[in-house]
Length: 165
Image 1 (cartoon, rainbow, N blue to C red):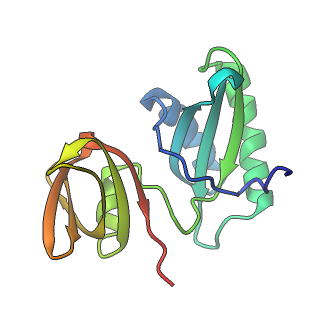
Image 2: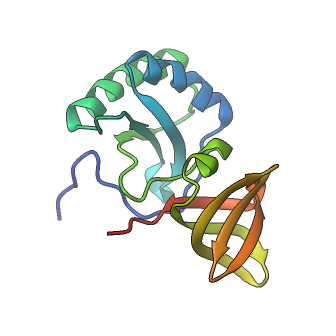
């Protein structure tokens, strides 16, 4: 089986990159006219790590957009060298199952269906699928089967929108 296109998204648990890496890359991506949705630094076992950068814009993202961002980001990473050792770089559209990285994302997508995976159990569960009801302080509100759960942002391991057709 060959490699998928550069904008292909695999379902993996999201691990946000260190904040300094996101802060380094945000102005680079935004200077090209894109929104930096989020950055993940994933361990890939004996293969090293993968730096995945999600970008977006109103018109959507093309392979050429990913290539332009990859080229510019590669130059910055080569100069700044913020990641020790070997790693791969992937620039991607957030796709229909858009990952949610920041507190503002939960407010922005209020009313959308989302899947949360938690770092620890809440009411005996680590996974919730429901409708986002915004933020209250540092807690995400999610409605699942008529019940409102208040999930501390720090407890969320990964969050993605659930596409509805």
